[in-house]
Length: 190
Image 1 (cartoon, one colour):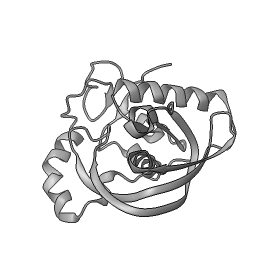
Image 2 (tube, rainbow, N blue to C red):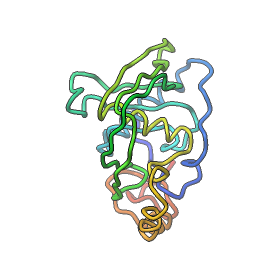
Image 3 (cartoon, helix red, strand yellow):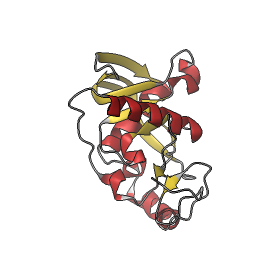
């Protein structure tokens, strides 16, 4: 397994729609494993393929890091699709691609999602609370949507200065990144 660099706000891949995975293969299994390793290195609880520069519809969620789901190992979801959403709740969200910015976002409280596992078997999962929120956040990434897009115009305008710094690569994180400057770790991003 490898730790992949995470693409930071301002990188065009974060705004692109990921393509469905059409067939199983070692490439996708390795990508999912590397994404889990990357997510853990960055102390995250979710990661989408767009965030590591890949336009495949793959997300990973570290359900074990979410207190209410502590007995569930990390989940890799290929081609995830939300089947059902119910209720709403608002809490603060952050993102590994938008470090040091957290804002309140309204999302469904309960969801049901269908996806393929790395063996290309169809799975369904009902998720509530934080686990459901993380899944929705990561599926948004696959559609080129950032949590910032759920904020009002005034809030986005207030964040503009901080977002401009991210776009210029002015970020201090302890995981490898791809931004508009050298990676924060001083390593080659690829």
